[in-house]
Amino acid sequence: MPRFFPVALTLIGTLLFGDGAYIHAKAWLAQVLLERAFDRSITTGAAVKPWSWADTWPVARIEVKRIGASVIVLEGTSGQALAFGPGHVHQTVDAGERGIAVYAAHRDTHFRFLRNVAMGDVIDVTRSDGKRFQYRADSSAVVRFDESGIDAATQNAELVLATCWPFDALASGPERYILHATLIETGE
Image (cartoon, rainbow, N blue to C red; front, side, top):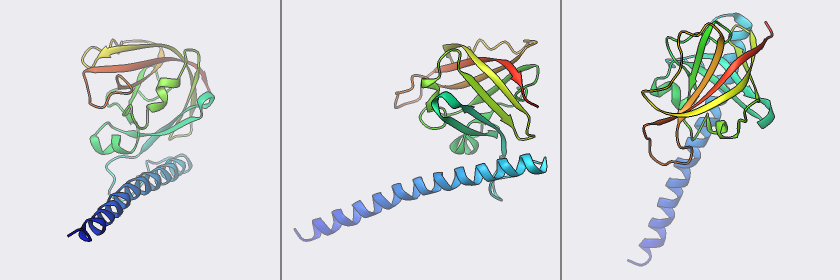
């Protein structure tokens, strides 16, 4: 019996390591495929799925250069989409348009960088049609999930990045972190 334990522990450890390595390899490959699909979308002017069975496609890239953050945004906020990147919330405008473009992502993955965004930081958004927009972070708030305070009737071009709060929580809760930014420049 004592010989069985080291062999069993080694086997279990190998399986757990392999599972963890598989998840990281899958995430890395997904990001490579998302980048390629986004670049092809800009080149062709058409939505390009990152893999044939995807139920979403890249619609934008968000960058905060001061902190080295860059993420590809996907269409929609289904569980599938949010597993691979931030999602563009349906029924909100595209970046650069009059109204509020809302993007949401998980706090522990794709929007982890929001904790490091300072008021006044420039947020660059490149849409899949190649149009570029710069926003300046001007406020943030912690709100209940059902009381965002987002003014959908605004006549300005605004951006909201939303994620769960608090950043270090292990379980989901009712609060959301909302980062608001206002359009400062277009580079169409």
